[in-house]
Length: 88
Image (cartoon, rainbow, N blue to C red):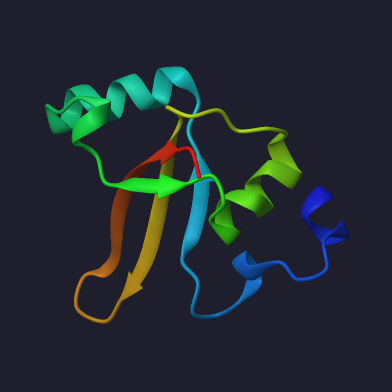
């Protein structure tokens, strides 16, 4: 995995939730399911450590892409959130 080449992979830390980059088709399906536009999603900056690790795996991630974040939860088992990648 390309992410093994970086100094510290934050996505392997126990307290950091899973991050998954969605392809265009998956992103459109999620937007339709949630009945929202991209601009209505919470934002995540390209400078975020999780995005930097994903860029080492997938290559440069452009603004406007959607990332799926899965957090472990004691009450709901897992909580899924979606974030829109923005500059910064």
